[in-house]
Length: 262
Image 1 (cartoon, rainbow, N blue to C red):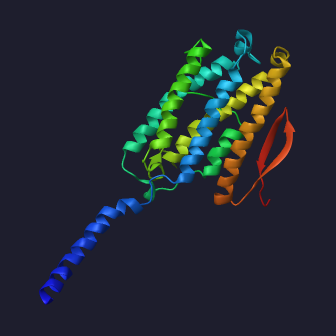
Image 2 (cartoon, helix red, strand yellow; image 1 turned 30 degrees about the vertical axis):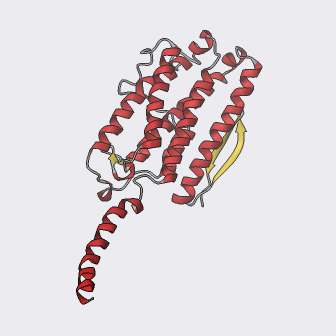
Image 3 (spheres, rainbow, N blue to C red; image 1 turned 120 degrees about the vertical axis):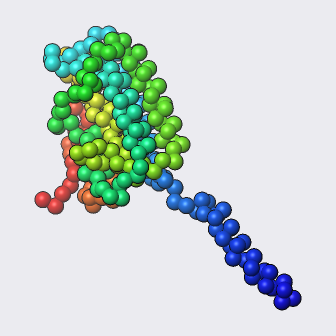
């Protein structure tokens, strides 16, 4: 009996250690939280769908219409997305291959800032880095196809990745984490979705559209803006503790502003 007890005592620590080693992965914290995954997925699916919906059924004249000679047409906006997003995707893949380094760094932006970038088009930015070559795709169908094909790859990545995107930094001067940069790919597209809406709601362009198209557009504006607003509000509540308030609508699109203590 004593011999048996001694053997059990010897085996027990090894058994406990073995069980811990095998069970540890089952209880480990996932590299990406469910909330982070859902936020990326919802936003990417929203912007992918909205680009397709906003250009559907437009005539060649509507696709090539420019509010002024120095502004882009709708076809050129979609071409820009088809040119820019492959570069963004390569950049984030490269950053994720580097060693995790966000423990030693602090992001220059809150998640709400990334969300707000897609909502607020008050400040316009000049496109560069080769992404201004909007005549790369002269056919809308080709540009949209390229955009959608890469979006399918990125959405599948979001659904399945085990990468710890929060642990990897992106950028040199103004550092953010890779999850934020992934979100910014989609909020960048959202800015251009709003640009397409602006083109479609100019007086000349509007006269060329059927009333039913305008009705669809306005409902699409509401859905897209509200989804972005809800995501941004959640970011704000967690990070800035400042809710978003709706202001009176303009051109059928609700405008949202951050509520502050000032």
